[in-house]
Length: 220
Image (cartoon, rainbow, N blue to C red; front, side, top):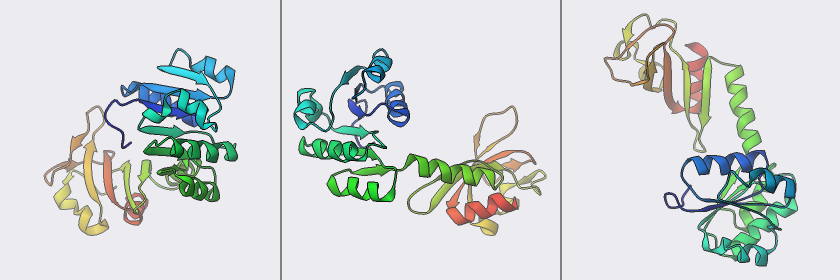
């Protein structure tokens, strides 16, 4: 997030997505103000976040009274209640929150959120579905794709690795990917160097254009 290190963050909507974001922010050392309409959810999070309140996040005055306008970063985790999601982003924009992250469940929802002031629109279900599809249909063990068509993946070493160095394997020449790290069973990840030896069964962290990473994972 673009907020200052350890600066307070408001997370609105403490469902599965918003709750996970809030809990992760706390672990990273941020103070978190959690806001939700449901008393039961507020109670569940009362001892896990810095502050948790029951409030109507579509009401600008209510958010103002909570001091939300003084915070620089907000996360809107409301999903299926699209009207509430959009109106909450509007309220945050009116209060001058400068860095607004919002969850969307459809492309249309996301476009509306962007139009009314969300700085970052997140599609967690779509992103997870894409990630799982890659893991199911290749040798990848993990996969992250970025907006500009660049990806990072954890995958197994090529079948023909056989104790060769990365320089000898010439994976950048053959596939256009860069090996960032190598992990052998029972050892920690090490940064990849041209002289790094790769054995069959090693784990590799590779980076490159999405198509190139996919091709390497499929053929390795």
